[in-house]
Image (cartoon, rainbow, N blue to C red; front, side):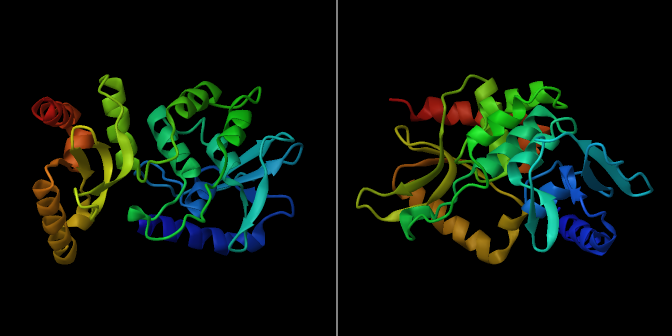
Length: 264
């Protein structure tokens, strides 16, 4: 997806000199510029918006959009005119599923942090929840019901789309709400690692392992991390994309089993 993102942004740069004075990139194009996650599909078209009553561009490779006053705010990112993060999320309402909108909202609302507290928190989210709420309530907004439903499920601590998917699976299965982006320490206070989801009172951690975990350095770090977790009395549920996206029932079975085994 990162290669596709970079290629799309390069096309935005190439087209930028051709934009009309009041035109801007919106929807999926703006999302890619901001690093807001999109579902894994081909995003070839450039999405370009204009304020009403201007005519939206219509040609091969271009998806044009008209926006009424107040529907979007525009800013500059790396020299490109794009809708701001809150507006970008709102313009995805008519294009994405509820789950994908939750993942996008999680990215917009996320408050970045350094695991283990080794660096003071100075970062801020891309947008505030109140901004998203206001835009989702705007009358006539495409996909407004999905936007509102997604925002009810969005949070500020999810660190990746797969983590969001796991959280939604567990929520809909009525499992207890886990802690997110949780720092794990041993009894002496030594930092052992950060887990995407955790039940601290039961010492159960849930880890999503992408293909990046298959590299030799990462594999070594994972082995050492999980050994330290085990020595500290933690149970680790390790999940991959196969479990989360193809066999979610198996992912849930493993989580339930870990929770049952951990209870006194």
